[in-house]
Length: 226
Image (cartoon, rainbow, N blue to C red):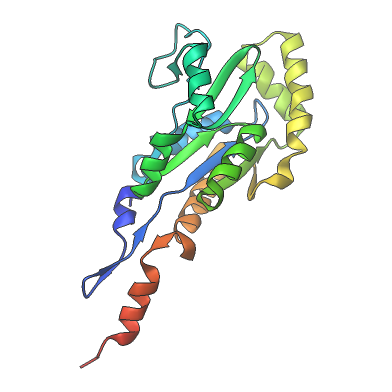
């Protein structure tokens, strides 16, 4: 059942239970599997997850598609969005700016659609501060630092110096694991994927996410049984 379908909720004697959408945030050190898991969740159509498309001021890479990977904008436009509180979170990385537009996310949540974010711990802090109970956070851990290094080397995308820098950054990021609601040790991608789906299904059923539930329950209790 998709996020949109689930939003319709239960029906009884004309009473409906809707559901506000949630924001599922995945964070991890580089190489731990966050991007692969985000892609797998996004491609599972029955989950009904929408991806937040970030804006960035950096140049588009040849392999990227504008509007799918990022929305590429000028520094001036980015600063205007930031100053008008149109970004849920933003950061400067290597001289370029990245951020998450607020309005598309709020529209989706109001329609009962869940969003998935692939952001670091700093962005997670900002989104949680802004969106509060709408946010569910998961930190993805590698099974070992040796395996993390092996995965980075196997990607064959970075120099040895860059890999060493990523491993150093990984230790800083891993220290933030206690800030997250859930932790998944990604030893096996399939098992981690199933764990994330279980988290999503459980969070969708939380009492506080179900709109109209008190009235529905009152109606149940008031029903006359023939």
